[in-house]
Image (cartoon, rainbow, N blue to C red; front, side, top):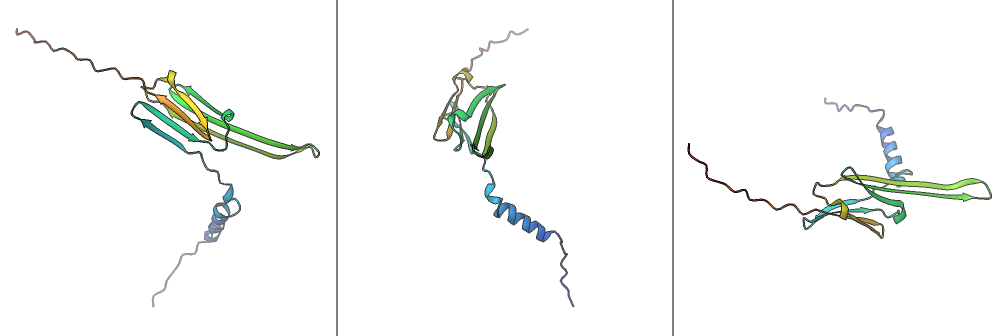
Length: 143
């Protein structure tokens, strides 16, 4: 007679409840989505960085160049107070940080950024590469 033995896992039900609660249940809706960042080249003449920041205004966003890298930061704080009860009703904070290494041929003096409808677009033009130089070959002397 064959028996089917199943190993008992005392934590299986606890794991299922945790997954249901945090992923699908009450706290699942609080999961935050990271902003989408697109990096691509345009005609091999420039790199374009697009960061989708729908919850931020242009005053919340900064773009810096630091040691050959593009540093994008966004930070937003909201606070509402009820003056009658003297306590904070609502306070929230959001932040975003991204550091992108720039290619060596970047022309840093011509980098430009625009912010429109929640999308930060940074144009990073490339400096023209020097043209190859022809090296003349001379005939060697026979000794």
